[in-house]
Length: 276
Ligand SMILES: Nc1ncnc2c1ncn2[C@@H]1O[C@H](COP(=O)(O)OP(=O)(O)OP(=O)(O)O)[C@@H](O)[C@H]1O
Image (cartoon, rainbow, N blue to C red; front, side, top):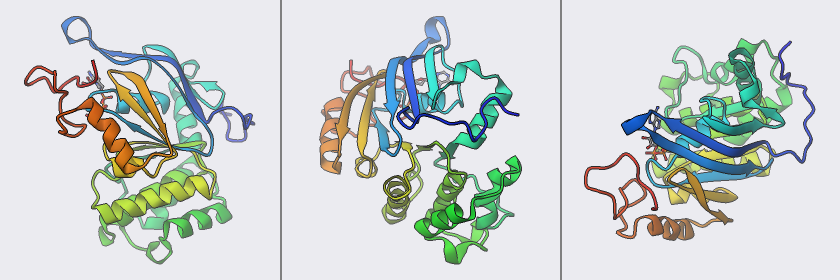
């Protein structure tokens, strides 16, 4: 039996995930980088949070540490009531498999499997029987019913990413982490994926955390957290694309977008952008 079985009761008031004094340091000496610098964050159940910030501000590191894909240097990352640092590798794998959904920029579908087989693959591997009613709801909400027998090569990029989203949600995880899920998509396909993520939160009660560079994508969320230099420096509720864009410009008054180095960064230093 795993140390974190799927049926573990969790208080509905406990956030789906939370970080306390999260610190992540890469390298040593001259190459030392503080990617996360004492981050406190709650991801409440049934909410859609976008994480934004300049390139190198720590967005992916925060997501990876919260999702148990990377270890922290200091502080605690919790999924529900479980402190990830107390788990060994096996327990961590089981927790990720049973309680966390992932969507990445690359769809990561298996080419030889149909869309439906890809969606249920994690559960098949885990020996878990899909909840038919839930699976039907996911498939219908994501609009994939007519494509279930297709292989990834027979699907558009947007459809493939929607399969990846359905796969992340099929096991009814406690939280879904999405890292630039629309990064490879045109704006219309991206909107379909974002619409699905938003509906999974509003209509299906899921919890979604999404890293994005795109103010339009962030506007689908209930709140946006802004990171700079490994710290959460601002929060915006009920964001609009325009307000998010305005806020991002504060990081980069030259208007070069959030991937650009800050105005005061030395030339050629693209490694560690952020508000100073
Ligand atoms: N494996 C690693 N080894 C060394 N440094 C790392 C590693 N991963 C990330 N970093 C550094 O940590 C800092 C934060 O990186 P992170 O990828 O979290 O930023 P980000 O905000 O997601 O950036 P981007 O928007 O460009 O994806 C950066 O300075 C980065 O160079």
